Image 1 (cartoon, rainbow, N blue to C red):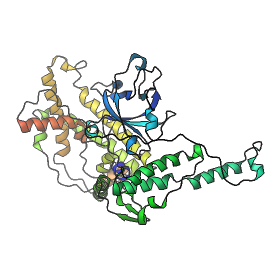
Image 2: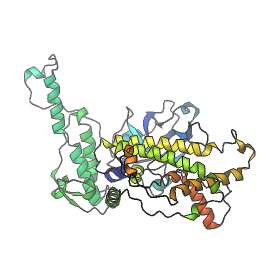
Image 3: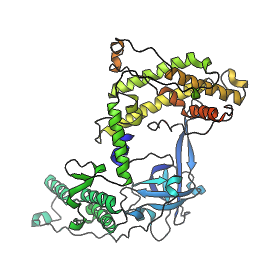
Length: 453
């Protein structure tokens, strides 16, 4: 969503997963190898939705949170799973051989429930240069040097609620994880993650995270503190000074911020002129106009219901995740609920689209694939036509008639883009004067629907 892009610079990619890490019990894997098998939903044209196991083969990037040191991102080789590991799905299996455990190379990680981020996206792998992992010293537990009375020192003294409260307060007061993390972000923005200051802060952060285990209190050196309390604009520190970041994150932040402000302002429900692009119309679309009108009305009814339920003012807010004035952590749940609801509706309508072309259940049983494909494209064009053609402007009492939807009376255009891949195929065929009866072009169906699963 746009909110995730703005606040966390989260860019959604297709070739990636977040998985729990486990050790190789069979000792089949060599150092540098991993086994990854992910299950993905199979949204076929049939009504049933199942999952299929996809083994990942080839180079992968593996990391975990926190990831402050450049060496926390490891370049490993995903191999075909041996028979001993065939049932290891939706986990990343690390080898038990080698000079150092791979999880430990990633900011002192382990396998007690840590989640690992795995990417096999070609664009990320193409220019990646691996760095040496951070050298981790053996963990030493310091004795508590806090002055306590003899009665508290006694091992026979039972713990009381006051003891637990004191331990909790002392831990909070001695924790410097947030301070170190913020300083690392600032210095990385100014000097880069490979700078000496950032490398030193990465080591301090690893020590600060383990303070509950080691008892070693980590203090922030003065030379590593944020200079003049000036933070990059993308951190949105309203109570401190800020500067215009020239990094990629800063540029991305400003683009998304401007876009969200425009989306927030562009919620005028009045109808505006809509231009119908004839290059999206395939021959024979007129045959499907009647059913397309019914399907569009049903789609808009579902979408307006969600908009009313969550107080959204435009489709753009829903499909881009640009919820205005909603920036706290609690709103992540709301955005995810919207995604789940719209995603389910999308899948239902796509199944409705393909239902009449099921060769096993209707009159298309003996039709040639080329004929069926032409009819699919014609139906997709009909969905586009009924959404973009001229309509009668809403009557004055339209809002009162639709009070259930908060009086929203704007023009809705999302419906035809449920079949994005087909509309793009039509446009490409028309521009190149090719025959649209050829097999469908493998366009990612979500490319114009980034907010949907």
